[in-house]
Image 1 (cartoon, rainbow, N blue to C red):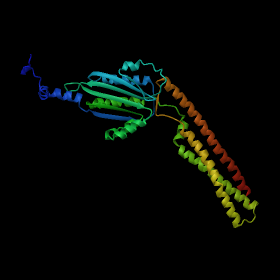
Image 2: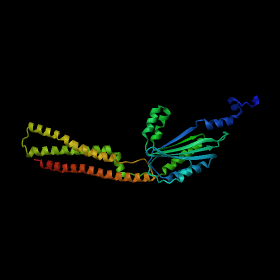
Image 3: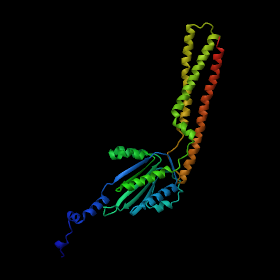
Image 4: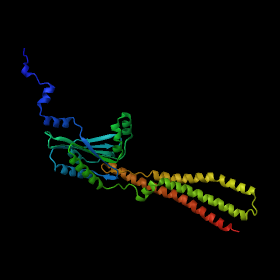
Length: 337
């Protein structure tokens, strides 16, 4: 039977660690277990993206990394579609050669660059990561996950997830992180902005609460002036010497009629408010798949339809106010003794 001699016994963990030079040990520790620093930039401006925009960004990142001592660089892309479907491209060539003909609609794009940087005083190259996430909307499931986890670190990420886009660099070398964040920021500023909504309609949508209030109160004011003009005209043409009883009856009728006219005013104002609320836009518009292009066409068509509905609702309100204005102007004029 063979036996192992004492000289063949493998070294213990402590002996193995002690045998590794301290500089090498520190480098390996940071590479495999160390938590690097992070630099985060959040973007809130609207953006319209196509695959060519992503190719342009990758070219910029690759050129920037070429100015540093990079041992290895890997780019991966994750596409999230509606209906909780995902596509992952583990290599850049897979993404670049993909034919975007699927009917699904893109909801989220995540690009990640992993690269190893040779840094002075580190025996082994150190891992750095650049991540860019762009999303149409925050998913409720993500919020519930954070709340359920009860983790303060997770909750701190809510601003990132709620923003249309953010980039994060996990780094050892601070200079590289600054350069990459600036590069992504410049690229983002150079993208087209979505034009799903007519600028005038978008301006109205942002102020829909005030517009609905004006339309509501304007019709009530016109009715009040109409009633007052009628009473003024009646005091000289119907009742020569009005008594207190006549005044009480007129006041009662005037107050009582405010309820139905108030309902009409509220409905017309609500109609205008609803049409503006249903004008749909998004800070992030993807033009990747056939489904994306179809959604853009549908949104533009629906927004034009809602714009026409708003014009009709406003014209009804305007017409009633103008009609009432002619009547009370006439009654005030004819009511003069």
